[in-house]
Image (cartoon, rainbow, N blue to C red; front, top):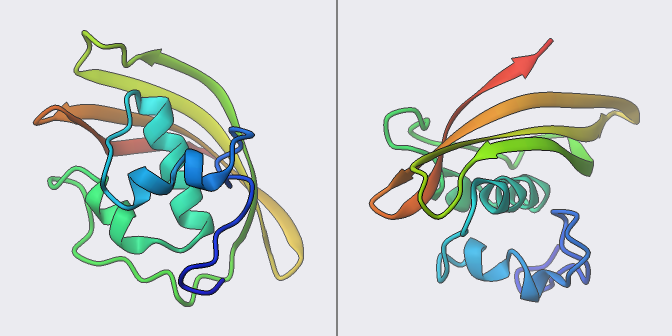
Amino acid sequence: MAKHEFPSDCPCGSGKPYKECCFMLHMEKENPKTPEALMRSRYAAYVMKKADYLLYSWHPDTRPSELDLKDDSAKWVGLTILGHEAGGPDDDEGTVEFVAKYKIGGKAAKLTEKSRFVRLKGRWVYLDGAVEE
């Protein structure tokens, strides 16, 4: 995808156009209002290989020092949110359980994870996640 070329539908699965959904989050001009919104924006960032946003939205205590997605051969094909806990306007923690489907070398696979998010200086960030084997 060219630098200024945007997908019409947001990869996060919201059904909204990208420019009206995750674009402003990826540009770091707005912050997600809920852990689920952050989860969706992070999934879209993986689809679009936006490593800078993934690092920005990751808690500093658990994020890697760098993230190179250029050689990532996964083709992300769908996100299903299974559920969420907490993460409301009065919460400082929340979880989102999801299934992310992808293909590697044409072979279908999926990642099921329960992610933990915390509010850090007023902004939701990804802390860590438990992957279902």
